[in-house]
Image 1 (cartoon, rainbow, N blue to C red):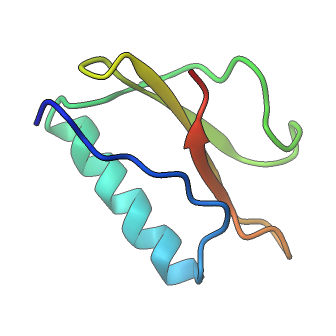
Image 2: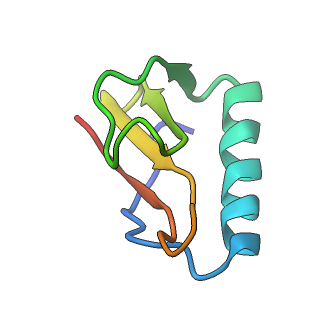
Length: 79
């Protein structure tokens, strides 16, 4: 898996969609395609759960911000 076609998700349609996405990213970590790295700058503030992931083959870092209340979550490129 050298080239993923990663696309930004401005908000998840449902909590179930978020859970499926989270399971997918965990699978990518287990398979060694991506590694989790430390969050360097929070997207929505320190009160929101956030994780960063480095896709080494693409030279990109992406963030996953968990849904919270009316905020539907976010998946987007950092670098």
